[in-house]
Length: 172
Image (cartoon, rainbow, N blue to C red; front, side):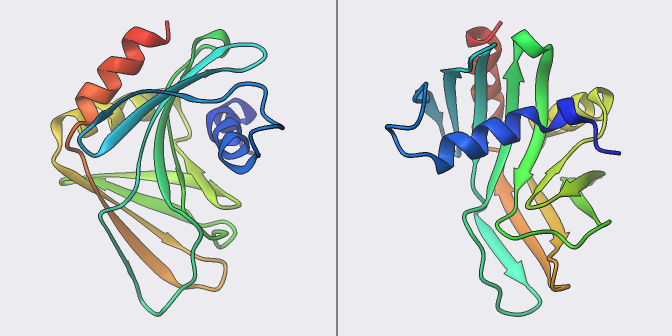
């Protein structure tokens, strides 16, 4: 079973990215660009939302694959008691019942999948991932599309700690 609370940030971000300006209740406001990460905030009906986002520096696949935009996100929603929700939008629907392998330098984690998103399944795991990311240089996200194609996205962690500090101070 997917913990519905864990889907909050990515669902809100997906709606924010996908809507036209006239349909949105709150336009995200940039809190700054921190090398390879950008911090944003906006007001949801029940909470302030702050998030940082980055896109991969490289993407590799076993064969040619068409993908929508790819993002890695860390979200705070203090009104929902969510702090450091780790998620990715991979750009294709994942193969059902598969896990995503997240590797921060030498440390590996698994994320559960639903549609085109993946999340850490516990707050404890999220804290470990964020800590590893603050100390790391790069990370990879490896997943399998619904068609069975494996992809690996490589991200930079340059600016990650500064971007996290910004949303930590902006979204309490």
